[in-house]
Every structure is written in structure tokens, then in C-alpha cells.
Image (cartoon, rainbow, N blue to C red; front, side):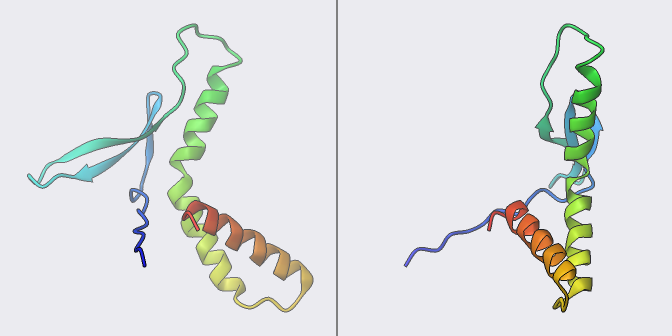
Length: 103
């Protein structure tokens, strides 16, 4: 039998810094450093129609830990749904949580 260890995501808060999504993480030495979570594409030719999309993608990625926490809270509040609409919301929420957690 094999044991698979699932990695947990880097804790938030995450923030947009340039074209990177970073978090401020404590180091063993006691200081803090920015750790890059993700980077949006570099675009060397500024084009008005591309920059807003890149910025929106960065904001969405940076919000991921907060969105996951909110979705878990909503799923807990719904509990065991007793009507079709609540069941659909609960199922959608739980599928998104599982996807985010790699399940």
C-alpha cells in the first residue's frame, strides 16, 4: 500500500505585484520574503486590449485563497440540502472545493 501526500496550497493572503502573484512568507531567519505563487504572461508590446485581461487574471489568481475559504464556509452553511436548488448549489460548491484541493 502506498501513501500519497497531498501538498497544501501556499497560505494567503496573495497579492498582485507587477505581473506576479506573491505572498509574504516568514523565513527561518525571522525575516519575511515575497514568494511568487504564479506569474501572468509577460507582454513586451503594450496593447490596450491585452493589459486589462492580464490584470484581471492576476487579480482572480490572487483572490483564490479567499474564494476557496468563502466557498467552504458557504458549503458548511448549506449543510445537508433539502431542496433541489440547495442541492445543486451544494454539489457545485463541493466539486469546486475538491478541484481546488486536488481531490
